Image (tube, rainbow, N blue to C red):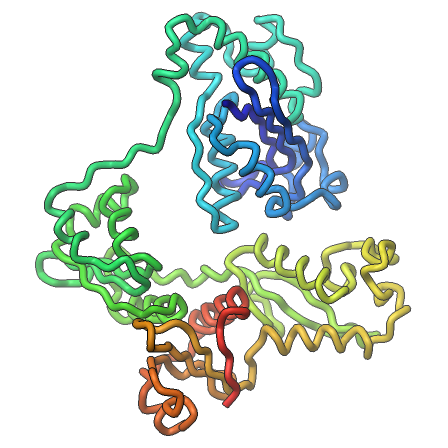
Length: 454
């Protein structure tokens, strides 16, 4: 079974593109058995040349589903299928990047009709989809739109299957992600590592730490370092002599320790700790009519920050969720640039703050509930998470809005007695990186974590 697809994107920097339209035709080698076609709101600007090429503009996508809303359908229609596309490396990369942003490992076998055409129809003047289709008499409707290009690819692929007398498509061109071999001297290191959450330290022959990282599965992550072919992994493979680790149980504790220890040890293969890993933040301000606004902007801007995000896309996605869940006004959350009533007011999901129908006092009550829920400013708080063993818990301590340290406990009286608690924790620096890490982690895991005011 094949999933023949075409994707239109926003254009822009490599791996920062967003999908604007996707068309997928499930094909059994004889006929189309299912299809999925949709515009997609990329939550980012479309490059002008792309608008001119495809005709897809921001207004068309304003009310289109976001990628996370169509992701399940994409998984379902491509399940157990080989992805076929004209220049499949591009379309497959875009799909995997979008799923990676959602934290989902999307893997499929792929076939490229450009490569197949070069093998089975040699000596063509051009292998672009448009020129190749014209040369082969394949009708293309809606050129540079996902559905039109995907339909043309279906017709081209059927022709290629017919030309493939040696069945080289099945034998040769199905690409799988092969498991790289691990050098024998690295296997023994991996065998000693746990498949648990923690911080790991890669040492050279002198015992110096050359790299520090964190993972929810230390063994799996080190295996990746030892098999990947990127420049950092190759340097690790050349220099590694041993790996030590510290179990944390909690990913939050691992993130905080990783951040602190990279700064303290300055390993040669770690980048200077990513000061911009949390590049965007949720800000608030009050307008002259008394309404409190939310706005996602660069984290280095001045203003009151509620929580932070690794990129603008995740910030906008979060803002969209709280706008819907708390029935906020899209105009006051800056998701809509309208000068009149917002779209949500028209569908009765906004109470009318955009046109001053809802009072500032009523509207701000819901906004303050959100601020209180996601900000720990001026709070004294214990964040309880998993420990290193079944009976143990980890604790991150916030006092008067400042991160003061972390530790582990296995008895309730240890956290109920402040003096005992403070003696258990390891004191750590309160800096912006740690604040970002805590805010982001609590926001994403609040339902699972136990938060105690003290």
